[in-house]
Length: 397
Ligand code: NAD
Ligand code: MG
View 1 (cartoon, protein in one colour):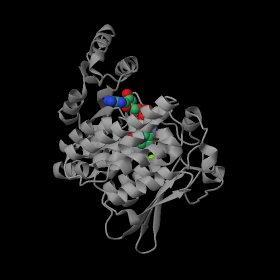
View 2 (tube, rainbow, N blue to C red):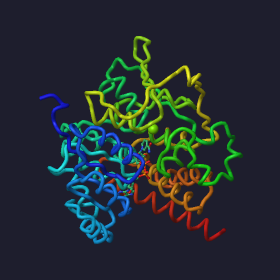
View 3 (spheres, rainbow, N blue to C red):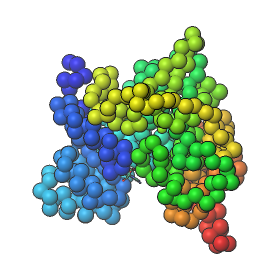
View 4 (cartoon, helix red, strand yellow):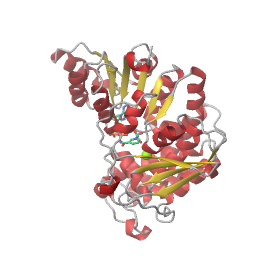
């Protein structure tokens, strides 16, 4: 049987988010081949109910357990047969269970780790947008996927580009290096001193991509590119010295792979995540994504520049964590999540984000990351330290 003649049942975790919406858009274009089987969200019950009405999944999950009655009653009131669930354990069980073949892992942050790992262990096709889970536990994740025969298809434009160039998740000996492109975010070209007073609204106004608030702030600090270097290391099995970053403000070249013979392959396209999702949903076939082709004559030019590590220290901190290994990436990621959340709530300033991450890394030296428990413990300690420091700042202010 060809891949296109089987119906793929898809679970979309983080369905109410930006990636979730793009995934559902692509799925709806292919009713003969793709079906929404499970929809899950964190706390937005009404938005989840609307999606259930539209896509008619077998199961719907709300992560916040206290919202279960609202989901169950809402489904009933709308006359839907979708079964209601709540809590992280339900997410894990549905990720691993018989209801789906493919999981779109698009929960934001370390909150996505458990369900993503559960899908990998169950051998599902894993469309992995939740980069924080790879940063936190990349080795465990790829080992679990390999052991269970789970295909991981990266849903990050850069890693998806590399995956397309390699036609695989394994960079073999013929790859010299991989270069991730970065838009540079909304503050590209500014000096460090010019970043002191930027607001959350300015930080989330990304010039090229429309994304959720957390990754938008990460793009503004360049932590996103740092997380992506760690992500690339785990996905493609390359050490940090064979991974580079190039700022490319047009966001049309999504990343480059350089081979030992001097060839460089790149993937180009408009900045729209539906392309990456269509690659993941259709692989190895190519299917319509709704994204127009690229007209380079209209686009005019492609520019490239080096990243400014001084203005954007998060990139340097992430490179350091990648080199240090062990629990360092987990600490970096956890401190960053807490700091970004505080920044979005107006509790800290933009430049406090790298300062807090640096403090957490200094306070918690990297230890071996030989178990999930060790990683979760490092994550929890980094969150506590960062929260305490933020509370101290607030008390002094
Ligand atoms: P978003 O904020 O738009 O959506 C996040 C989703 O996660 C929502 O559906 C929300 O309900 C759900 N969620 C949040 N906390 C949860 C919890 N505790 N339990 C269960 N569900 C929870 O974010 P996004 O921009 O769609 O990004 C999602 C992931 O994809 C992130 O890891 C991000 O880094 C990655 N990613 C996004 C893009 C993009 O273009 N948006 C590109 C590359 C990678
Ligand atoms: Mg990306």
